[in-house]
Image (cartoon, rainbow, N blue to C red; front, side):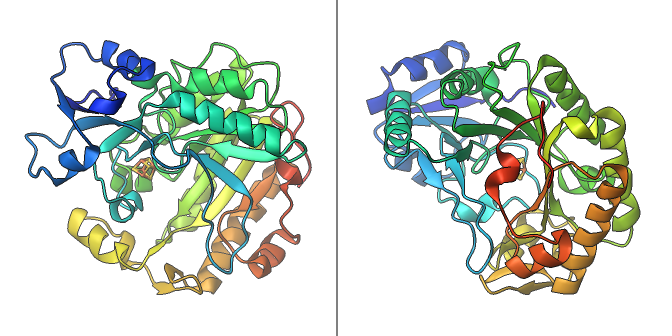
Length: 359
Ligand code: SF4
């Protein structure tokens, strides 16, 4: 997948002189630049000559937010840093299509405010263990060649030992990570994985499965913790065989005892997404599955289907390695108990690749 370079950059006047704005611009020499008073000006200016634009703006709210989780489901206590929004990879099931008022790739460049906020959080919650990542509203590494976010954040989290910092990606864009992770042993680079067929049909612009795993192997070799998310799990006739093949390909390349964690999360999306996916991706078969509204109003596969998928995949993973830490994303306590025979505990996240915990 080639690096993303925009056809034009729109910059809010109030962030123009900020160091981070200028740093990004220095990586975009020759790209037309437009100054605007507020990003809403760009969003309302339709149509733009190209959709491939980048907006540099001020984060007006909090950078650090708890994961909104989902009603009546287990919340694993994750926090995300809202540094950028949107993503050019364009997966058919991506909830950002229906989630954001601003459809353009946007980076918030008031980084001083971010680090002040992180300092305050660290000071106020001295004993609290945090899991924090940047991959909620965009792919964590998709713009790293322009922003250098990974270096800045990894160097910050190297000194916050009670936090585990995760960069979540589908890309192979690991070139801008620090060559070696800090000795703090609290940085995890993680990849979302799916069978080759799903990648081909639903994640068309993302790197292939083997390419993602190779990137993970490179990071592991450099000393980073690596994690994997089978999320969203898609139900289709050949799912069992193809997810097992995917797990096997992963374990053939990455020693299971070096994996920080594996998460499983079945496809889910807000009701309004059904129409959005049909409109934006008429060729996708995602919406043809048997999805029903759950207690939180989100569409999910019928519970027996989800349970069967979780049980089958966890049993297969356990048959290959009984110790790799596993968790379920956005599921109920009763599914946790049935599938993993235990309740949620954040203890599984405390250590990374060099000493994974039993789960
Ligand atoms: S990689 Fe993630 S953020 Fe990007 S389009 Fe796919 S699901 Fe959305």
